[in-house]
Structure formats: C-alpha cells, structure tokens
Image 1 (cartoon, rainbow, N blue to C red):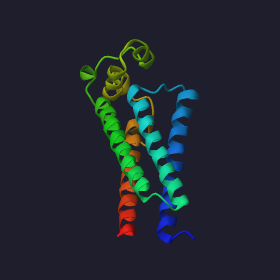
Image 2 (cartoon, helix red, strand yellow):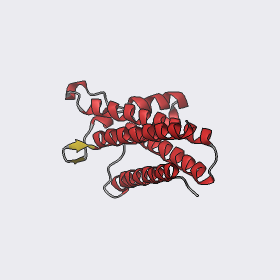
Image 3 (spheres, rainbow, N blue to C red):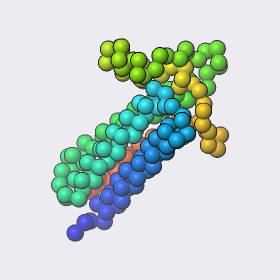
Image 4 (cartoon, rainbow, N blue to C red):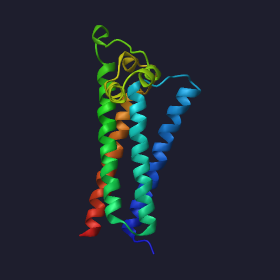
Length: 173
C-alpha cells in the first residue's frame, strides 16, 4: 500500500512531468507550426526542461518500486540543478531582451554552423551565452515574452522540487 506522503509526491511528480510535456509541446508547436525558430538560449532551456522531466520520471519510478530513497533524493537534487540552469539561461535571455538596441550583441551564424565547425566546448559556451537572436521578442502572452514565461516556470518547478526534497527528508526523519 502506498503511504499518504508517497501518494502526494507521486501526484506532484506526475504533474511536473505533465507541465513540462505541455511546455515542450507548445515550444515545438511554436517552432514547427508557427515557424518561430528557437534561439540558442531557448534550445538550452529545452535541455533543462528535459533534464527535470527525466529526473522526475526516475524519482517517480523509484516511488512506485518503493525503493531507492537515495536515488529519489539524487533525482530531486538534479531537478533543482536543472531548474537553476533553466533560470540562469532564461534570465540571460530576459537580460538580452531588455538591452538597448545598440547594446544587443550581433547575431551569430546559427547553431547548425556552430555544431559543424566549432569545438564542442566552444559551442556549449555559445549556447549559454546566446547572441542577438536571443534578444528578439517574437511572441508575447499577457505582455511577457517566452523567455519571461520560461523563467517563471523554472522558478515554479524549482520551488516544487524543493518542497519534494523537504517532504522526502521529513518522511525519513
């Protein structure tokens, strides 16, 4: 039988995975249906969403197996790392979007060029740095850009993960 505390954590983990599936689904819809090409920082944020969802799935799996408290704790910690990484990259995008036009960095040659012609570590650095493409605001909802909404969701996901971690530690005590 599943304990009440486990039941709450399982529902929260399922909700986290569902929210991320919805966010990524809308991102791909925007890319392939609305033709809004993601900038390097958007691609990096997608990576962090996947990281959080995969770690949430692993934690969920160990809840169902009723084993691996250490693995669940490790999954929660990695979810927080993903949330922090997402907040940093979304924060960088927001910062670029609010720069005066004359201070915006020049647009790069694009991710495909970087992957084909630059060393892996340099490409990774460019993904976190972004370029002028990241400063463009092509989409808004309620006055907020996609980067600003992404930042808000990373905050919510990180706080949710902190709650899960505290709750799991309380169960262990």
